[in-house]
Image (cartoon, rainbow, N blue to C red; front, side):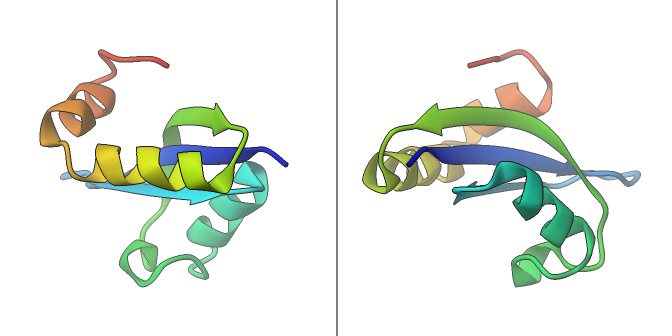
Length: 84
């Protein structure tokens, strides 16, 4: 089973980002935009700006943690200067 690490960017004047992991990327984005995702994502509309595929949940969670805690990487992804 493949897992995805993804970053969403909110569609608003001052956009914020959200990083997560999932098995079903398409469905997860639908849930976030329907207000049924993580508490932080509710009430906003989101667009997918980054995705990365992994073979195991453990590897995906590790990468998610790394991206969440590395402001430099998040900024590069947000500004569309990095693609993986």
